[in-house]
Length: 401
Image 1 (tube, rainbow, N blue to C red):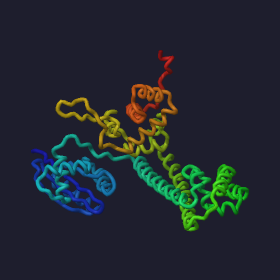
Image 2 (cartoon, rainbow, N blue to C red):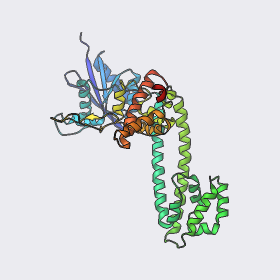
Image 3 (cartoon, one colour):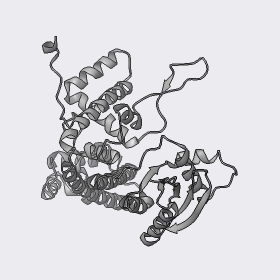
């Protein structure tokens, strides 16, 4: 007796999913819209399993996180085979099916049919607990950093409208003492009335680093501007609120970095990843978050480089061959990890510096040389994780000769 084989495609959404089940001939056997609720999803999985009648069911879905997290967890708990089709792939595949309309049922049917026909789809990976936590924390850190950048830009813009001398003099982005100053004193006349000695004492009470230099810089800027700009009081009050907001963000980021570092160091690959020059706890955490904590899905080093956007893709046509370009689709988080770590390693690692200098001597621009180094380092890191071996620098050139 032939075992029945079915394919179930899920068009995932935030509140509802649509599931379509087809057989080997592509005949639609089941179509159902379910809420993103555990009870309804369990009922759907049981119904499709019964429909298979002791046969096999291959599930496919167009999301790998977010609103699809619950149904993915339920399918994994029941040992169901699950494939992942990116939304872009589903969008382009839909153009090959009859009709211009777009519905959840059609998308689910396309997902199921693509899973039935294609052999190049990857099984859905279930990330380990620490990697999922790191993904949440690093994503939140990225949001906080963007909020901080926006707040600093607004503060600098507003301060420059009524007190440009102080805006030019202070390193607001990188100096905590400058932000502490702006929480209390931020107008030319207010700084002059206070005086340098009292301002320095006020900064020291609030544990501002290098209080004497900051106070002198602020008073010099205040003495350079005597005119009062219209709207100064309201602008200064807003600058004070923004400075407090940035300080609060800095405190939250410091606490978050500690939490990220703690979780990263508890991961089984932490020692291997951190031994790679240029990769610290934060970049290491972003790497684990991007790969899910396991490189099993990357069968080769070339596959890891391709996903990270470090492997050029051919662009041949007709008589034109050997033409390569950067890929358009890649994991930007992985590319960021490899690119930034490559830049850092140039300053701290002799092997990386030598490789970078060689690429520069070949005529490559800085960005091209760093990308070439990042590509080489991705191969090394893949091999290190495969063999569970920490990084060992190469022998000195003189010894090798």
